[in-house]
Image (cartoon, rainbow, N blue to C red; front, side, top):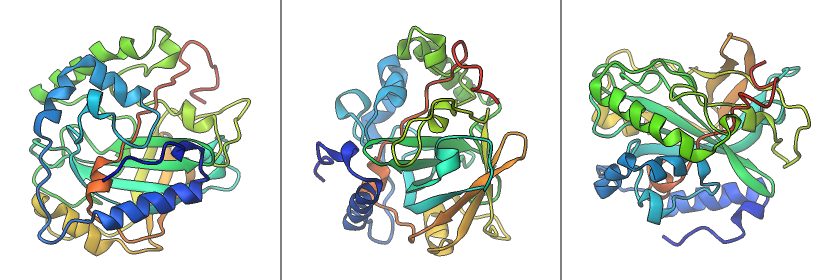
Length: 296
């Protein structure tokens, strides 16, 4: 499929969403869903420059020269249109206060056992690059249960215990300084993704003068998970069968349990080549040494 238009970032959020949804429908996989092989892209996680691109690439698609064509870790997923509906009176600013429309991708980490689900949320911004969130339940997964809505997801995860998880965390620590020489312009550690960028801009593209961001964001599932364990190899079919347009998918809270808003679906979810290839940049600005409101 062709690359996104060169002026994509400058478009209104609604037009961006329409383009993404059209491309997902055009590239939807036929049943039975194929396994998505990351191929040589998996080797990219060993290269600090590729890891740094996860924080520095401001577009909605991967840079194939640096990052490869396929996601190296969360390779298989399902995606759909969503709306973030903010909690009235929330003290947090930017996207947390304005809400917004975008794409939610639910996925599992490839080549990892047990089942390790995660989400990536892309809030589209008028005339500006998107704001993205990444969250997981645990780096160590949830055993053999492939039910995506069994547990809440968080932007702050505990360090994994498995050796391969510890090795991955070490690589990320090595890559962090290549993001920026300024500690305030990169994540504090490998377990916490900062939220200051999301608090610094509204969905209409307006900048926030005094951003106030939560230290962490939690996504609490509202759909009833399957009573029995779901085969991890069938998690995409399970999500597509369960999620309907108009569903309240997640209640969104800060790390202290204060409600920030709701995440509601506005379309069905689909497994597609475009959805699997879409890029969700990791937030990088921590404000650790420059912004006193970053962790309010």
